[in-house]
Length: 355
Image (cartoon, rainbow, N blue to C red; front, top):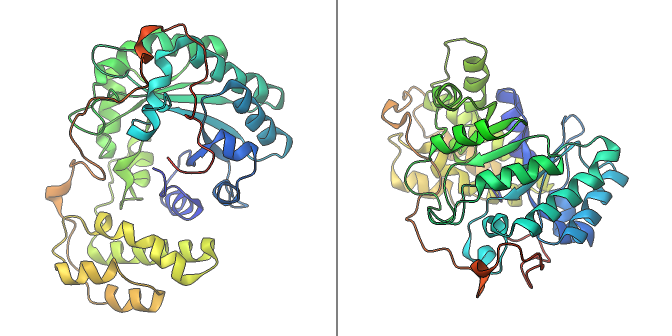
């Protein structure tokens, strides 16, 4: 969710329903050296509680330094360590979803974060995938290592790195992890509707769910989730007028965060297709919205939508966001030779906020 879960989107989601909203992925080295781009990304609204920061790191010492900064400067109330990234430029250097294979290195990173955060009472959690591929599952052992290191919960995206965002998530893996651990286990993967979340909990016994792509262009999913877990039947099936109002609110919040209208509306462009997915909106109008540069221009375009157009029910339960094909995971030479090698991979720790 890089480039998505900034202050503006998190506030929009909070306005819709309850939940814990995690910021964009922050690299530990960038946090430790005060990278200017990262300083912007770690901002939280004054009314945002709890403040949840997601960190990516591959060096235990740098991870500890970054977490100590979070503690010393009161930057967040919760730290989530991301071990799920399957992007080639990350795994090819031994980072992201490649790390849990190196169990000693993985354990050292998690313990470094927990040890640095515990004195301040800041919980540390992790998110990971099932493994590199079907031949190298790591999630059960990694879950136990993380539990022993003192994490507050473990979240599992029930796909391998090789699957990327293809196929279906293996919810049975979530159930197996739940059976193996004493700490809470959260499930992630294919939560497109609130009823999917209820079904995941019922089928796996997990303690909660993590939502990613399912909320793209649908921040009201969190209202549905709150209703579902409270046992209420109502679901938000917005007409196009409601969606247009939400789009305008999103662009407005982005403009306020950027402190520049043009930058905010430009940032909003990538959300247009997600919001309008399934609605009968012509390609010319979609394209114009995805090129808007001001709120006034966006208002003129939104006014051309038919507010009475009902929600496209054919889209219920359908995937959103990135979809791709399985692919071989690119790893450093000899990465799979020794699972107990605790050496920090050279070059895997990004020095900016990319990735």
